[in-house]
Length: 67
Image 1 (cartoon, rainbow, N blue to C red):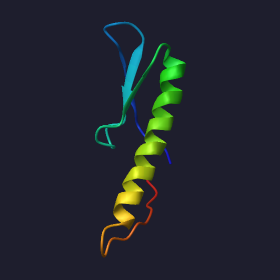
Image 2 (cartoon, rainbow, N blue to C red):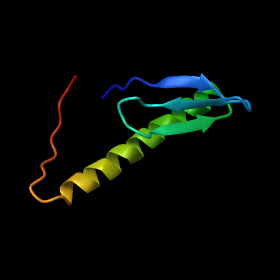
Image 3 (cartoon, one colour):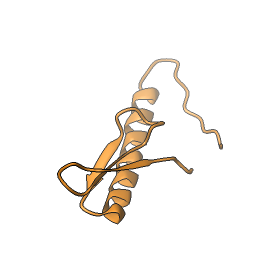
């Protein structure tokens, strides 16, 4: 799966990143490389939580699409 991310310079130094497709999925790092690693981990965690929430909802179904 490929996701678009946006990396921003942080006011206090370093960077922060967001995944616009995943509401609230953000991370930060001291370097751009560290920020990329951290946002990948955040996105994976976001997906795990979203999947767990969906599978515990009655009549919910989890499936995948490829873009």
